[in-house]
Length: 183
Image (cartoon, rainbow, N blue to C red; front, side):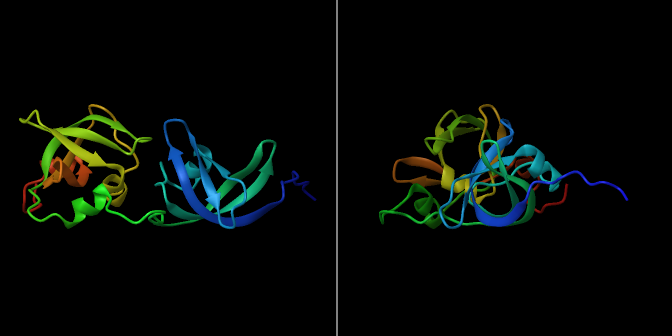
């Protein structure tokens, strides 16, 4: 008979990703029911075949009680990103971006700066020094978690109430593809 190492007792929990930073190698999940946040380590994310998890994604995970609190040890399911409910009604910059008519074509741009905590930043379209506003909600809607200064992206822009703003963000490669998608 083969002796098995004692495994910590685990249970399945569901929650929403509060934040995850692949560079730091961890993040946190807010569990359903309002219990304490659950640590989501990069090793758990990588074991699921992913390199990152988007903020707001609904996840089911196997959780154990560690020395410092609850920790995910296995991602069972990763669902869709849910938009957080607004506490106060009003117009958000991302709402304006989605509704704006006359958005241009996808063009190559470089990130000037982006502050994830502030929730916005600016990019510059190649050949134009004007700043283009980019909101965190737009990034999330387009499947991005963050942008780094100097990073190349493809953006579709439109005139907003305070100037040019990004209404769509894609990977750099999208800016290099010809309009018919044949490369």
